[in-house]
Image 1: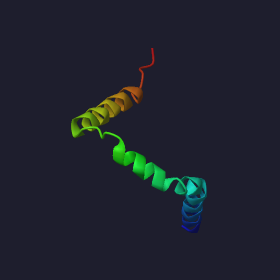
Image 2: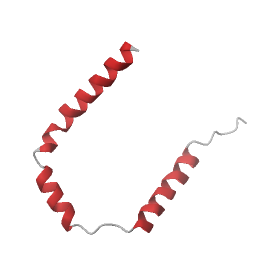
Image 3: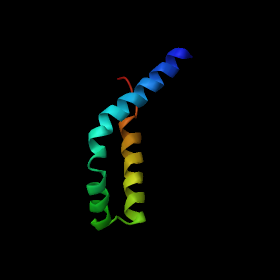
Image 4: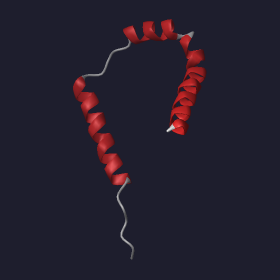
Length: 65
């Protein structure tokens, strides 16, 4: 239990260290996102369905000959 908690705290610290350079550009990224056209819900749904289908195809087990 303690080992899992230590790994969780370490993972959060690692994420903060890795993502810290991006915090400086947060304003520029949010301003850019306001001017970029957003995809419709149908497009996002189709991308999600395609991801599920590709994942199911990729995880199929082959029969041994």
